Structure formats: C-alpha cells, structure tokens
Length: 115
Image 1 (cartoon, rainbow, N blue to C red):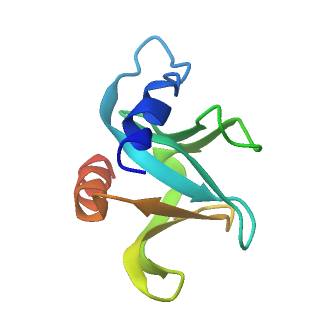
Image 2: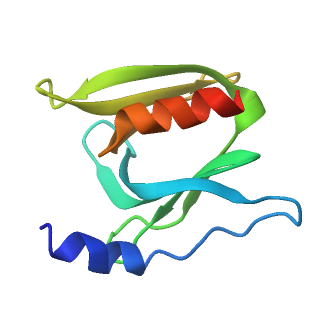
C-alpha cells in the first residue's frame, strides 16, 4: 500500500480555487461518507476552505468543500475504535466530517492558525 499511495495521490487533481485563494497545506487523507464507507484522496487547506478531493480509483468521486468560517469545532477521534488517527470537523449547520489523516497533529495546528 505504501508504494501505491503516492501514485494514487498524484492522480488527485488540485481543487478549483477563487482568484485570491492559495493552498497552504495538503496531504493524503480519507473521508468517511456514511457510517462505513471511506473515500481515499487528498485534503487541501487553503486560506479560505478545507477541501477533500477523491482519487480516481474510488467508486464515490467528487469534491467536499468546507468554508473555514463555518468550522465550529475541530476534534481528534479514534477510527475503527482502535486507531488514533482521526479528525472530526463540525460546522455551523451541524454537519460533521470525519477524516483519517497521517499527520493529524499538523492538520490541527494548521487549521487552528487559520481559525
């Protein structure tokens, strides 16, 4: 899997961005879409949004975008009840986004800088 991950991530296209929007941080991630379905791809932090783009090998494709001003809570979570590598993002509209990340503490630090 370690050999496949860089190839899959290289196939993830950068998100469409506004004229004044720039990428601050990016890395591989998985996003839960439903209780048991995770979608692999890449997570991007821009100066305006948090954006997840699925890689092309997923059945579920597409982009998920969260405006940074809408984020109300950032919390650590355990995935599969045993692995301490998850992050949950809560938003003003009571949505929750569950992610699996390699560098969770770095993501939290980067997100807190932008909040």
